[in-house]
Length: 129
Image 1: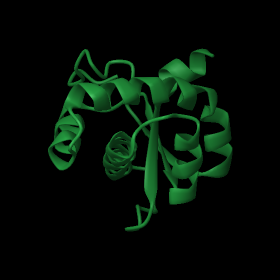
Image 2: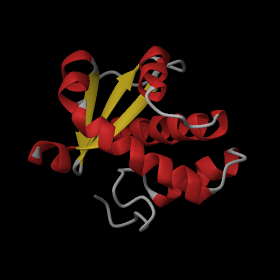
Image 3: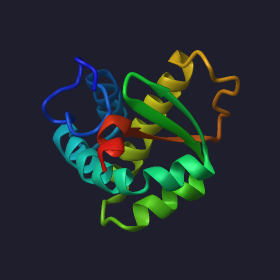
Image 4: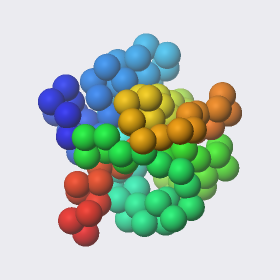
């Protein structure tokens, strides 16, 4: 995990900057978004292998970012009872963080299209399982 993560998101690979921008674009508060990110991250760790098999990914500094479709996000969020504002904020934060990972990755040829979504998972944590 990077040094710029807050205590609120230290269990999810979303930087403070991304959380702040996500909060600015949302009517939900930062604490509610951070809580949802942490809850979702535990599920994503369990789906790490599936995501790796089925989607393009890049890895930078212990974070693996996957490029996925909106349908994948709908499926992920179906397991939770997030209100629409939180669900949108969580998907937005993951997509922004994933785009940043893809930009930073040196071995990735393809970048995000406008309609792509992103999912990020701490692989150091995932690999321990």
